[in-house]
Amino acid sequence: MVFQEETFASRWWPFGGRPSPREKATSRGVEAGADEHDALALADSLEKGLAHEFAEDFLITLPQNGLERFYIERSTDKLQFRLFREGGEFLMHADYRLDNKQVHFSLYDPDNKDMSTLYDRERPAFVMEFNQARTEWMLLHHEDNRSRYSPWGQKSKSGSIRRETQEVAFVRHHTEEIGGGENHCMDVSVARKASLGDSDSSDSSSGEDRVVDRLVTRPAVWNEELQTLVLSFRNREAIPSAKNFQLTVDDRPNRVVLQHVKIAANTFALDFRYPLNISQAFALAVTTPFWK
Image 1: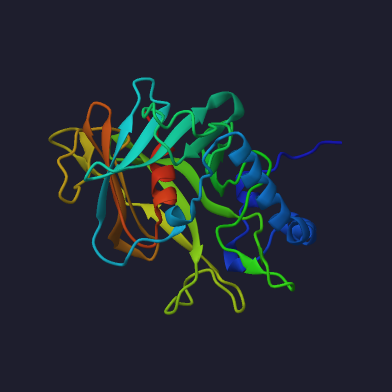
Image 2 (image 1 turned 90 degrees about the vertical axis):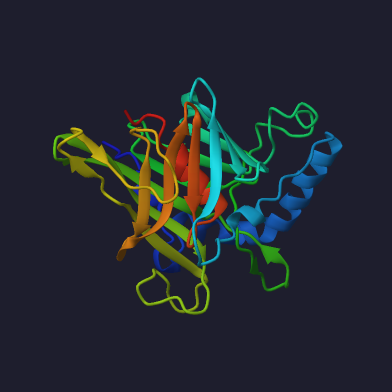
């Protein structure tokens, strides 16, 4: 008997707010034990003298206005990343775990030695898994190495808040031939909490509070004179790089919602807006180290 390996695409179930079979099978157990598990996890952190990471602020979508400006510093081995607001405020750290095909996201700066003893690097706030070919990526809100929870709690019959296992973003990479060059592309699905005014074009359904937005890569243009692909970035002076890209809403190709631009040897500008949140935008940027 041959078993087909489960793909990340088959695991991506937020469309229409539909729960996955895994969620249906575990929801009763989660409802009964989530509150107790949260209390035990927090107590365990406190007993070890560790801080407890609360990632809810990183799951809030940005406002529907202009691109907000951030930047990323990349390590020399290209496997660690630190996200900052443009003013210099540290936000998140990402660390590749190649053996496990994962990226761990933490809300502390490992370069800050005063904080290094307060956090357990093996208990990240988010985890992104990727396949062997590095073409599919799944971002999950991560409580610890044993449980993954939804950013949106739902009230149980007892009135307490329960959290379910749900994914935050799904990314698929592919390439397209444009002129004489090869353009790296993403197909992105990002989940967020539904709000008033969401149109029927969003993947929402009656009675559910999740919406999935689809984003696509804005294609570069082949320049015959330069013999290279070029892309115009808004208010950024770009250094040529295969990792430079822009994303637009699937049905609004002229509305750029994210741009990732190399601005120094190991520094990238990351500008984004609604419907993305900080964790999703940073994760999308972190999927590009293997683009050549």
